[in-house]
Image 1: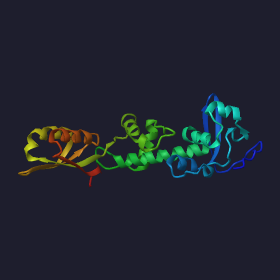
Image 2: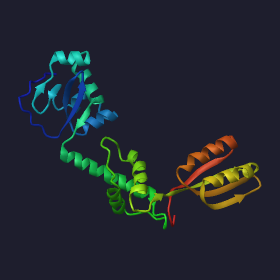
Image 3: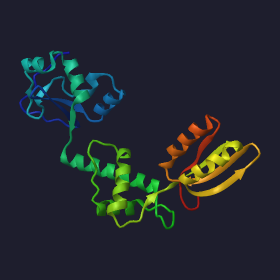
Image 4: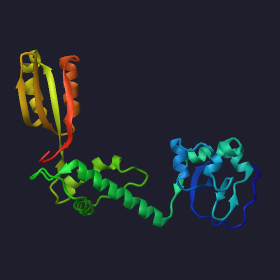
Length: 248
C-alpha cells in the first residue's frame, strides 16, 4: 500500500479516533465509525476497511505523524499492521461532546427500560412506566458510567433507587417450579420455604413432590445449589416466569 503524507490540517468526516498512550507517548489512528466495534467483535477482519488513513499519528486532527523511532521504542516494531492492531485492541475511542452526550443518553434510556422490565411497585406488583423510572434515577442521582453497557449497570441502579429515591420499588419475583422425589420432601420442605416469597402450588404425590413458588431472583442460585446437594441430580428447578407481576 502506498502511504500518502497527509496535509498539515486534516478534516475528516465520519471519523473515530482511537488513542493509545504507550512508552510515554501518545499514538492515534483515524478509523471509520462503527468499524472499530466491528473489528473488536470480529465482524470486520480487514484493517484497511477500518482505517480512514493508513498511518499512525501523534495527533490526527493536526496531521502529525508518529516518528519511526518512537514507534520502534514504544512498540518494538515499525510494522504498521502490528501497531494498528495493538492500538485498536487496547486504545480508547475518542468521542466528541455531542456524541458522548447522545451515547450516554441512549444507555441511560436502555437502563431505565431494563429496570422497568425487572422491577415492580411493591404494593401493586405491577411495573412502572419507563418515564417514572427515569425520573426516579434523576432523583436518586444516578449517573451512567461511560464505557460500560446498560445491562451491567442495572443492578447498581436498582440498589440506588431503593435507597436514594422516593419511589417504592422491588425486583419482580421469579415464578419457579420445583420437583423432587417424594422421599426427600420432609427434609427439603422447610429449607425450600425459606427461599420462597409465596407458595402458589404444593402437591405431594406418591413418587414426586411439586411446588410452584414466587422467589426473589437472588434465591434461584440458593435453591439450585440446595437441590444439587440434597437430591444428587434427582430434583428439578424450572423457571416458569422470569419477572412475575400482578396478572401474569
